[in-house]
Image 1: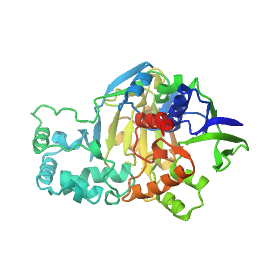
Image 2: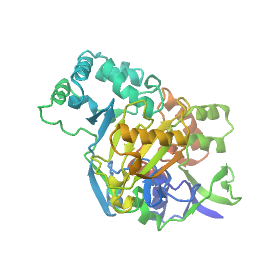
Image 3: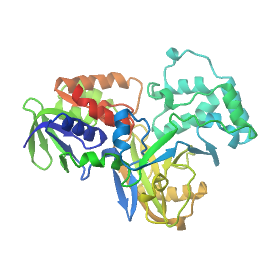
Image 4: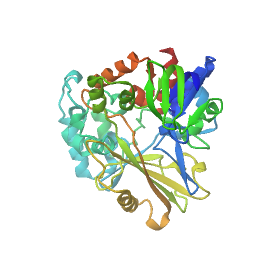
Length: 425
């Protein structure tokens, strides 16, 4: 087999790269290891309940994304969300929505905020220090540091601050105080976007379904070897493909092992880490009106860090008069998963009851499965290791794009644009 452009991976980045090639009248073939396209933005169905592979909503929206995604019928959702912390439901973000917490807890948080250190950003060595300087030591440990260990599966002192940017809201003292008094007006929603979009039908990946119709995608073709000198891909099914240009969206550590024998490169690739994710997906035998699309969980006795509602995002994701939730449990090399799938399911039942969402008898289906690559972990010094691997990839004439190809904190919209722009490199 021969192709002008070979693209490894049929997630949003790979699909966008194929779309860009088609616009340029270039022949492109996309090879996907899974049996279906979509990658991390794909979905699966359990007894009529559709679940995405973690929460997905479109909101970054470069102009091309708006043009393509919004051409599909879609819902516009508010970015309102909630937090469950020590038995209390608190509006997100906690730092300027303290009114739902007990008085003594509000006082401790406010004191923490007032007593925080004043240190220039350039002198902040790690994410824990950044949190303490922004919010004070008590709040930093009680809320974001605790959540970091659940979501990033890493100790905050081991992370750098390069990823957080505008993702962590930094309120003024006045905002903290106003958010602490029940009789004051509810604070403005300060989430980094106000509107989030989701397809009316077909799950999140349906945003690119029209593009896929015009692309040549071979699913179930897992790359096992890359000969960059001869420009030949070899696949697990025994087939080979000659290419003129290669675009890869596979995780950098996996790509490095296929193309390099350099000890420094392989050592750097080995140190690049991601979280993995267990997804516990729950379909209910009745319709629940969940107040928000997603919420965050701080309590350590509940393994899930984040929960979202596919049925809230679109009723097409569930059978008639039904509803659904999906629990995301993260783990990593630093913080391995402590529970079996059966234990995760039991703990999900317990969490539903503890949070007063539903009872065991309300559950029609429950499913547990795993995603190997979830989020890039921004360990201190990660960027230097990443650069070593990126240089090796470039030396072999490969264009690497997407969340795991760039090895960066990219949302789905950004991953799409990463793939679309890859041919401009």
